[in-house]
Every structure is written in C-alpha cells, then in structure tokens.
Length: 136
Ligand SMILES: [Zn+2]
Image 1 (cartoon, helix red, strand yellow):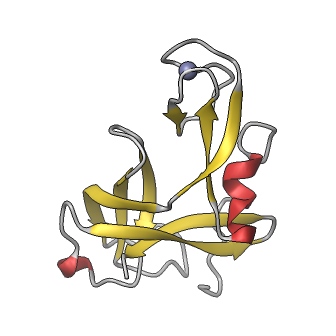
Image 2: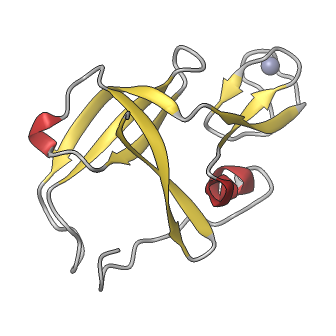
C-alpha cells in the first residue's frame, strides 16, 4: 500500500456490494442474468440483453486477457506510485465482458495485448479492489 496516497473508494449499494466485497473470499463477483445467462459488468437493475430483472451476483473464474492498456507515468496525487498500468481486461466468461482495472506484478514494458491475466484483490477499508496480474 502506498503511504500517503488516498484513493477514492466506491460507495457500496445493493447492486455493487458483491462486486466490491467478493474479494474477501477471493471471488470476483459479476451480475449474472438468471433469465438469459448474460453477464453484466456495469451494474444496472435490468439486463440490457433480455430486459430481465432477475440479476444475481455470481463468481466468475477471475481469468481473462488484456484487451487494451495504457501506461500512466504521471502522479496525479501525492504519494501515487508511477508508472502504473491501467488495462481493460476481457473476462473469459463471455465475449465483450470487460472491466477497467490495474495490472500489477508486471513491468509496464512487458504488458502485451492478449496476455493471460488473473484477478487478485487489494483490501482497503470496506472494499476489496479487483486488480489483475499475469496468470500463473
Ligand atoms: Zn438477460
């Protein structure tokens, strides 16, 4: 943990609580439509595919690949460690199921599109932030 850097943490509500706290049990929880089987990362009360409302957070494998990434070299806040890698990870469960995250445990120059990655969590206050690192 970087001393001095206060990151802003998400506000928990009924729709996103499972996502931000699943890491306590090592699980990446994504909303899964019980009507059509669609996974949705951007939590809403309705499935965008079938308009069903039976959404249930369920654990995914936590495995995916790097879809795109950018390297941030500027410290936007005091105490922020740079450079760091901001990446869009495509989860294995479904084409188009992507999340914006940080890639860690890898040198920025070694990050490649399509690289297999896996989730891990950083505990901060009452949330477990999902981060990704190269798959073992
Ligand atoms: Zn659906």
